[in-house]
Image (cartoon, rainbow, N blue to C red; front, side, top):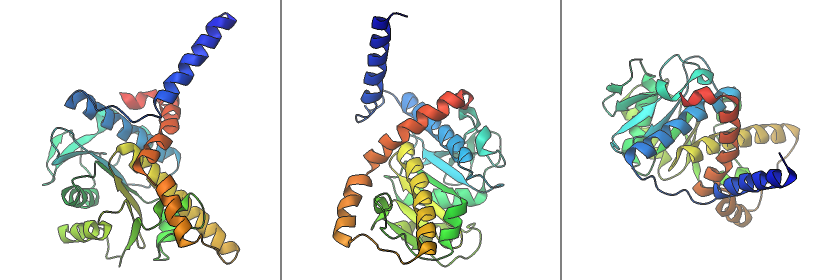
Length: 268
């Protein structure tokens, strides 16, 4: 390749990457949007597997179907996050019927996500896993403090769901969880873990990763000594700068590039 051809190729790549940091154009068809959501959902599982969020049968992420909003795509039970592909995703309705797919699903996952998707029509996706730092922080029974720029993304936009009452299998418990979430983007499930919800799969995946990181950071900081939280007015301003769904969508893009390059079979 000549120097000129290399420069043209590099410029085209830069333009392509820059283009992805623009608001995404609406899909032309339901099929196009469905595939987009399912591919990002499969990529989320692969990323969560890389981050060590998989634990036994626990953990689930969902994406609402664009054509049938009372239905959503979810991971099959007992398939490791690192192995999940687009073709593995199961389509279920609010009654728990598996409409597409031939594998069982996590009952607790159905209870939680069904309640969230019913209560929040604006929620396209939701994520919950038993990540180590999320569990450790949840045992404190407190909200995240705005101690870093990154943790400000969740300032006044998350809540603690308590008390812990066992595995979420009862519909009323799912409804209580949805009520506690309200119009926020995240929950700390006391003695349990973290949950994020939002308007795109990309935002929800990024928020979960960022929230787990914020929990880890606070655990480290408070073990080292007294904390010095950011002032409320500055934390609120920072939240408006780093806590938006669009910002989270953009932050997901490098992770999408990375995981698809490493594990292209996730798209199968």
